[in-house]
Image (cartoon, rainbow, N blue to C red; front, side, top):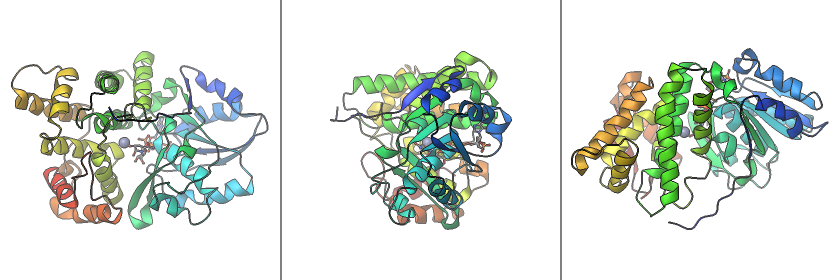
Length: 385
Ligand code: NZQ
Ligand code: ZN
């Protein structure tokens, strides 16, 4: 196992009715900026409950944060934050609203052009406003991690940053708030979370038994509860287990002390930037191809994955790995997500801008061995058509 430090200061407030705790989490008279996306949180009654819980505060609002939040659409909120001397940013939404809010928390305190935050991957953030979260969409773990992904549509760019200052102070996770998610989004969340674990688990062994067992437990929970949640969207126990799994797939726990890949995410982000595909869709396309191409370097962990996650015991080692990759793809398809670029009308001759973006953002040595060069990324993309 590698040496590591684990730090995660986010208070999780989990369970049925937990939104009522919001009143106690925010001090009286705090100047709060409530940030949300489209109409989903208004329609399912979450915003009404939030406004009611914050009657003891000075509340301002910023709405319209879109999926894959856009830098230029977010920036007017910086002026609003300064104008009202805001003391807490409260995100009500999924990964996009939370990521947008984290970015604003840093941008409002940043000396210089805030786009630099993305260009320097968050390294120059020295301060950020406090962030709170009401999570409406189990998927990214953004509610309890220090990462954020921001797009800039005018540049066809999608960049990420990371900094300890943007960990949310608290995150309220009430599984019932997510009942209103459409099946397509529910599936996206499950597949995104599943692939977060794969990126931290399917590398090479370092004798990290605890992290491996945590990862395998999360994968098993997702493969069981994902289809169950699609079939019975209002079953509390299923949704609660799914929501907790999603929160813990990418919160710094299972990546502690182990090698990490993340090539699927980096290539996937550029597919979203160029073609507008949902985040999880891009991952479901890239991961199976990448595992197939890297079955030798990832061999030991793929075998462990086959046996422990998919209970594949028959056949020789190569057959087990083949079956595990096939089961992975079949799981994504079972959740309703097509796993080839052609499912979305994208052909091989349209892929050059994806590679140009990877090069521009310095993503030319990806993967746990840093051996996924641009040429390898090109092959992964071509094999995914
Ligand atoms: O805009 P509204 O009306 O809120 O609708 C949203 C949105 O259209 C809807 N939704 C959310 N909660 C709902 C709901 N609809 C009905 N009922 C509810 N309870 O769902 C749509 C998608 O929401 P979004 O926030 O975009 O989804 P997700 O949570 O999957 O976030 C995706 C973003 O997170 C980034 C992705 O790149 C993408 O930009 N990621 C962030 C990460 C992080 N911060 O650590 C890691 C991830 O790998 C990922 O890259
Ligand atoms: Zn993701």
